[in-house]
Length: 175
Image 1 (cartoon, rainbow, N blue to C red):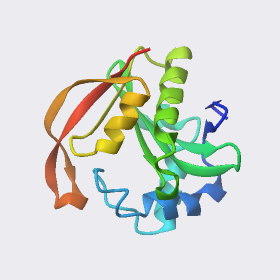
Image 2: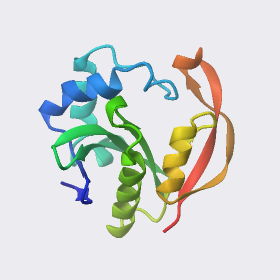
Image 3: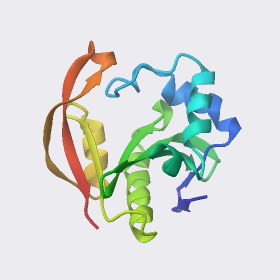
Image 4: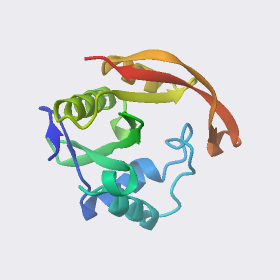
């Protein structure tokens, strides 16, 4: 376990996480609505991504890393946290599987991630961004201790929204 609260743990993936994460998150078209990628087409695509990006060496090797968000009580993978190098800081992004939304897992996982990265000296700042229309993500970021710092126009291309370029709100974690 990388870090944990009473309810959630953040850890690297285990092979048995692949199919559930594909089913509840990476393969779901609705979950990819505000992402710069299409939903994964099969469980093997999710497995390849996790194998490459969810291990202790992936941040150094790839400039990014993925942690599994686990509900400690039942040991279930409920979503993913992505950490990416962003100049002198780290950017964090998140996704919670459909059956686990609305329980505060995103905000809790975001706060755990930011606190861990800062406490271990891996970064001097933690940021994030989300689509201007993604109210649920905006709420989770604020609940986690992030503050809105601005708007970036035409920041990313959203394949699930007709391939249009989308504006995002930028956030910074405040201790």
